[in-house]
Length: 227
Image 1 (cartoon, helix red, strand yellow):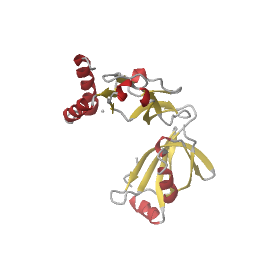
Image 2 (cartoon, helix red, strand yellow):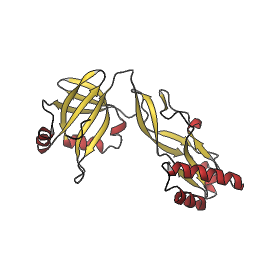
Image 3 (spheres, rainbow, N blue to C red):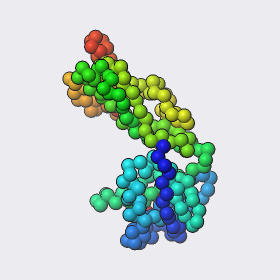
Image 4 (cartoon, helix red, strand yellow):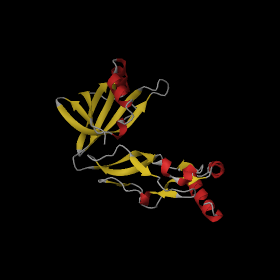
């Protein structure tokens, strides 16, 4: 996983909208650290540093060491609220972590060795159903990403979660079904599936499974932020 980030913070005595607005006028963002069988700790952090860390692209999946009152607290960002007009952060929730704790996180998926896929070489299209996987991970073993090798994949193939070797300390948060992550389809079949999947609750995944079945039968084989 990415190296832990460090975020300086200061404690705050008051909650509420008025106190939070005053902090934001001073370039500070109100936040809270909760969990770990301890009382919530009200803090505030520098807006510029928070924005910088958000801009790394991996802030939400990183361990963040929050330095407050001379103590470093090991946390995971759980929620960031943004202003609806300016898109600036307005509040952050941090989950306090113990060393042996497990947490649910969304981990991005990347596909590798596409040049080794016969189906893609023939003009097939990789239809990505899930760009992220919901995983339950040990807090000190959160992966940066999950790589999926498409070597040897043909048009009509599908990739399910059961086929993926997850890193040590990680397991799928969804355990009631062997869900589809991606399919290899012909371009024309992909367009049709996208049109048919708009109405379903999980239209993208349903569409991908429908394409897979059609291809096979034819032989060518989806806290406190109100302060």
